[in-house]
Image 1: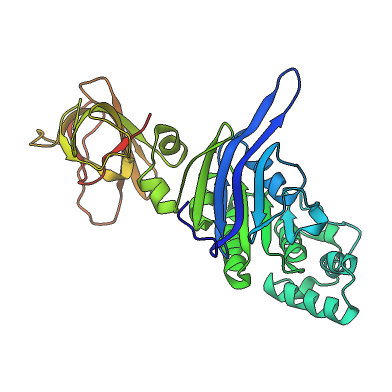
Image 2 (image 1 turned 45 degrees about the vertical axis):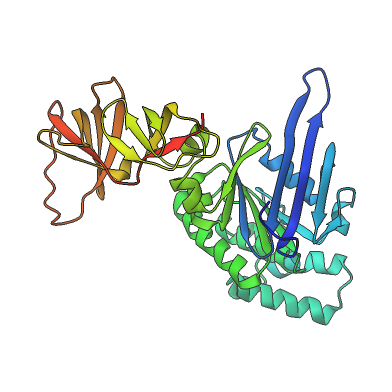
Length: 361
């Protein structure tokens, strides 16, 4: 990995997790990743990919079958959960409904034997951090879902752990509150300077909050990078398809150019290990435009299948002469003078320079 030892907070080194039995399950298959200090790191993938299992191993709730787990350079693979400076926020929050907000936050500090004065000061500081001072004495059972989540975060952050693990904590919230809490979580991570490791299957959550993302499938990490890198330069088809909307087209790679089966030649930087010859390429819907007329050099002929207006954008589904279907998404900015073909019309598809990405299948 490119990170230096000094940068890494959590070092996952060739970790396997095998659940034995008649139908043996290899939940993690040699996972290695260095998670940096003070970063918001997200494990992203579909259900059953191994992301929650990895989180549980970092927390100490599951032992690895093989491999090592280090925190600040020290092997903690066999250290029990209560001995690790790591806290977890669960999907169901795991709060005490009969206790007040303040008592819930204080509970973990009291279990650690902290002096009463320190407990009270920390509780007040956490309430201010999560903007819940006015609800200090209210019972948790009387709070909304979003308020309960803030209490759960305050309780987990109160001992100032080195690492905070978050296991799909937004999944039970409605869409509006979920979006608000995405910004709130990022603010909390920035203000506390604690390493956050976040598990989700939601691509928007990952793109919105993360400094880096690890995309997982079948117990393996397929790609690690910034949200921009993962979105704009996915290394393989699964990553491209899982993150955002995608068009996949057939082409032929030759050196630094790819010629699409549907027409047009584009400069590309192929991933390491991809040889010249037939390839699959990605084009994001927003990186293409559509107009009436006859295609010129580098443009593609198409026929409009459907036109869908959605307020800020119009999405067009186009049939290409190759039998491939292409989705283009165009902004509806006021006064942009855009004239769109209608369903059934012949059209011209233009792909933006630099928008074609060669994939590893």
